[in-house]
Image (tube, rainbow, N blue to C red; front, side, top):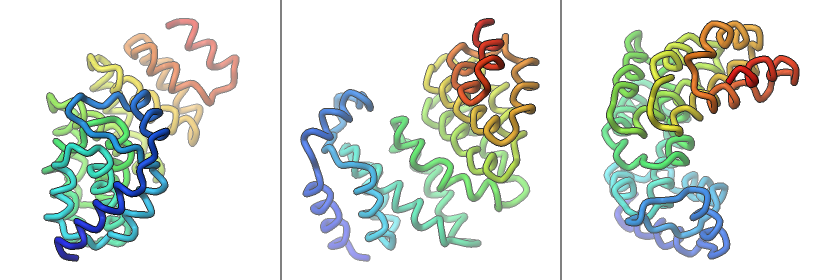
Length: 234
């Protein structure tokens, strides 16, 4: 696609804005003051990304550098669309591009819409050292890199591979950011959805180390009596 395609996408995007949606999203997303929030629904953005999935990476970079929140999200959703069919060198290129532009992945919704569907497939099917990416991201001073590391493991969880997530939970359980605590709980809950005894055993060993919100999120799908056993101790 050409630069004209980028201009057309941005024009379409602005035409999809809804003032009422913007008001709601301002409360939920709490974007920084230099962000411009249009108020475009995520399903609408996904349809737009599918229509522009062949957008050149240099145009996606323009979107990720934009201060318009939905433009960054649209760029990430284009990457996700591309990753669905990418293989080999193209997949590696998309992962490298994503990791080089995490500065534009700077809110929880942007992380949660992209990490497990852009970086995640590389963790599942990439080279033997692919999981080393998680350690690098988890050690980053950038909050959103750390959340990317956690949420990306959802792709592994869906394949029945739980150890990388559990290792990150142990590594990040003392992280100062509540958004990391919530992400850890979310991933533990997803593990419990697939293997409740494993989750229970993990919590029995580590519950005193985990933040309260992590335990509460992790146990949401457990039977009430089982959940109360952990929540009461927090």
